[in-house]
Image: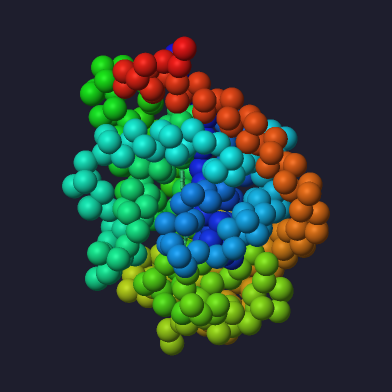
Length: 337
Ligand code: AMP
Ligand code: TRP
């Protein structure tokens, strides 16, 4: 079977609040790529339970993520928007990859190491094989491009290694090697309270992140109280070196306003955060305010969201089942009579 040339797959976990990092690192790029690619966007509920038993209300969070995607500009009529557990072939292909991937590869994954810390023995085995499921999400559609934030780079390199090993070991060219698409100044949005930590859903303090559902007042307040340093803003990007909080806020501004970082720096050169922060709050509210409003309207009609997700799953199942059959055949399983 020939490979598609421009098929996108990307995913997001239903693990609580969608935040500015998800929007700038992932969803904004998905929306921008919608016209040139055949798009599959997956709400990865199977991934969300790897934190067992500490996962949130996955069903409710799945609807919130679906609403957040549509509110951000994903068009479910042209892109397939669906829930991972509604397409069984993801988990089935992941099993094959559990057998392909070497344990050594998995033990080098920095996200796994960060998440388990010193408690490796107590981590779920699902957390360890998480990257195999992620590779299956992508390869079960023979996706060619995967737009994600910077933190997923290593997982995508692993997905390429898995595809290659599967093809070499079976002697069949079943999977393309998917390309990561990591672009723009928002690929690594940092915490508002610590410019060296990633903005994340799991951080306990809500002041560290801007949620897509935050009110205008909450956004302005979080930006006002964001950690900074006492210096004024420099005239050149290089002079931001060693100033992680300033760098983060400038990058956020550039990503939200669709400006080059150099232009933002020259616009605010010589000004203090007292001037910069209100300008940042204004652009953040102007972009995120309408998204929050649309999300609220969509969440008011869960039956319609479920209908959209069912139609996405139907399209996804059609593609995924045929690739799974091809992979089973390459492995050498006896076909069902
Ligand atoms: P997750 O919330 O972990 O499921 O992430 C979903 C998508 O958002 C992935 O493409 C991540 O790379 C991206 N993402 C998550 N956090 C950030 C962040 N702080 N900055 C940029 N992208 C992010
Ligand atoms: N691991 C990704 C994250 O935490 C989510 C994800 C799961 C994903 N499957 C994927 C991203 C497939 C891109 C493609 O952000």
